[in-house]
Image (cartoon, rainbow, N blue to C red; front, side, top):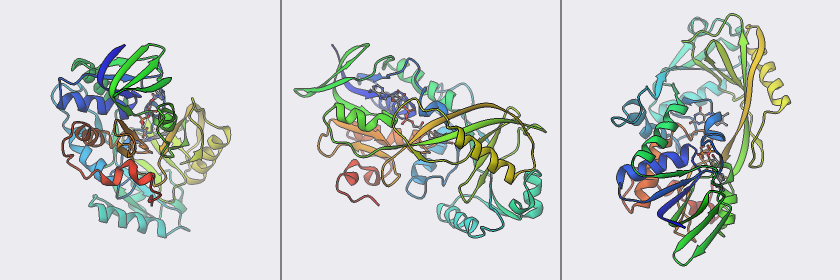
Length: 374
Ligand SMILES: Cc1cc2nc3c(=O)[nH]c(=O)nc-3n(C[C@H](O)[C@H](O)[C@H](O)COP(=O)(O)OP(=O)(O)OC[C@H]3O[C@@H](n4cnc5c(N)ncnc54)[C@H](O)[C@@H]3O)c2cc1C
């Protein structure tokens, strides 16, 4: 049985970024990362819409997103050969019959200090001529919204982790987890691992991993979200913005001439290899056609992923209140990519007994055990 200081269960963006941050701070630490699949990123991390939107998730998520920006713009030397983020911009629209939605968003941007600009009908038409008139009377332009190269970011974390001496085991589902004295004994198909501390970065399976370790669950709920990739005529311009209905019914963004369209669904689901539902896809296409005069030629691809939430929709980063050697890195919701650098720095500092740069109390697991969730 191999012995480690820390075993991280799950090698999606949550586990990968935390593993990297731990070894970047403490190179002598012995860290293993156990991933059930042969390919890390197979589940939620590989299925995201891949954008950075600073206020997305609300005011208690924003500190993590904002604090991650410098890492995305200026990663450490040698971390990644290509740019992690590239400018995109977001156009927040609304139907003429739903005037209040943009005002609410405007207040969020103002409170968060995020650059934005109100556009009139002509400004909206210049950004996206295909919008139908009832969706194009006014909009908010968010210039700082960016695309994230999720695959490059995730691979850079994993590469850096291994380069610094971390051990990544794939095909290594943590099946049996037992407390043996002061250590965890974790049985996987790839062998048995012993570690002083277990980090639970298992995404949709976070409560399942807790149960296997004899730790009470905290109520992480997977919610399904769908993306349909469509070919449109004319092709989607490379420089068009992400377009989001401020009323939360649809968003779409360009990719290689096509559009990724999501109906903004949040259907409660169970942890599994989730597939898109035909009805969610139909809703996405119908809403798109009502919003835009932009013929769809065909569906080119489709997928669904599980966004995983605690009851108050905030991440859970920190030790379990009942079992301090069990550390939660869960509930990343719909913002786990854009918050990864700061969330990982916070988690690593806590695991190493250092003071985190951001106040971790709002993300503590204890809030979910006392019934104090908002
Ligand atoms: C459609 C969609 C759009 C999104 N858009 C964005 C966006 O634009 N921006 C953004 O920031 N975020 C976005 N997100 C959210 C983001 O993708 C997630 O927050 C993030 O990927 C969660 O990462 P994770 O590491 O927690 O989960 P995962 O990537 O699912 O990783 C968890 C890993 O744990 C492994 N595992 C589970 N159980 C075990 C076990 N017992 N033993 C070993 N391994 C185990 C799994 O195999 C999995 O690989 C989106 C999500 C979806 C679905």
